Length: 173
Length: 409
Image 1 (cartoon, rainbow over the protein chains, first blue to last red):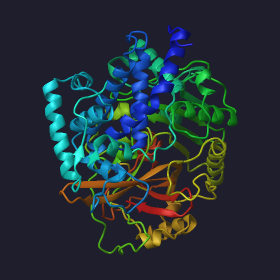
Image 2: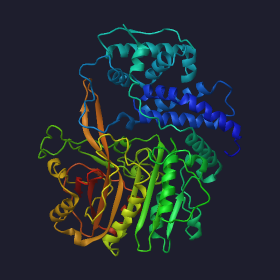
Image 3: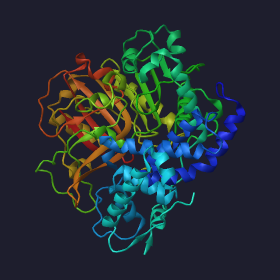
Image 4: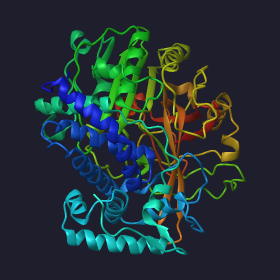
């Protein structure tokens, strides 16, 4: 099959990717807010994982894929053209006048959280990663994760008024 | 009290069908490995390689994909050129062809085109990679015995969005004479981009990618297909039109154009070319004239052509060449001012035909916002001033056949 890649490795990769792609896609969507871009991010993550499949330690593929995902999402968000919003329908409001606790409102709020803070929020409160795991995924210190998390939550609270956000402080994984 | 995790989960309710494909990821992974092995790809520089048939007909190796189209056009005796293709049968067979989202899908589509057009098979494949992100692009380019040049670009799944082409074009308010759009009408944006593989060459300010390298390889919106059929004045228009129809017809059964565009009534119903349309613009920022939306939206394209010709003083009789492109047109909406003072630009992408015609006569700029044209032919022809002094462009909605814009400079 692949050049220099044993077929068994490919089979293992396909099995892993098939199981994990949906969860990765959800995380990617929360990071970027666009399903198509989420597909691209996940596809990129899968490619990177595949390239290193033989070298990734057993059980570490998830963490590696997550790290690729977050890095790619944050990098993309820094590029100027990513500030644009592709849409099929016009006109449409770019800002919700009365944010409510709907998925759309949450997503709109999440988009306004800086990319790195958003990544921390998603990893910690969606992926349920611990501070240490989040720091590893983002290649930063635990202190940085804490501060980014606090700022991100504060920003989210500002953007989603009228209700009180609760969250699990410590990751379960 | 609202749990944050529940909140986050509530955003996932409208999850569409996934286009993620482990096999495509494997193919891309292999592609990248191969890419690293080739010296000409060192440094992350993209390169298109003339392979197989290209070599067989004696075409020189082209180091830059941007030169590919021009190479085809300028090389005497070249029948066609298939300059890049991935051959992964296991991958190709694993994905249906009706969702041209991934490289795999597009590869299958390219295969069908190749078969339909009876192009010889190419046994080898070479990838190229652009710095920053992978952009799978498949290209088929050939010249018919009638002198019609066909260039098909199939853009694979990549980290591009339709918005990219408009990234650096500053929004300009519509002219005051434009009527305000009424309910249900779409306001026309002030800037306009036609997505194409050489978009980076026309991005104001140069863009992120090297101009030469980026030419021809920056793809359309993911999974998009761009077809350019061009000819010079010596080729009768119906011949060129027939060639365009052949390509579009070969694609139609196998792909769904702009499937993810929910606003399209039936984007698979692509109208047939029936005649030439005069148009002109240049791929650099120039003044242009847009018809008011209430007029443009109701014009059929024959009427648009007639109107273009009339308003240009009949310059079409001076035309020296013309092209038809199929691709996604990105229409910019002027920036929306958010409550926090930031601006958000919105874009609409629509499958459309872009018809251009060059004229010997120089047309004065008519004022207005810039147009950024990027069609597959642009890199090959736009720099060729002998093609004409100016171009006219008419952009037709591929779903309805109506004219979206008539543009001149």
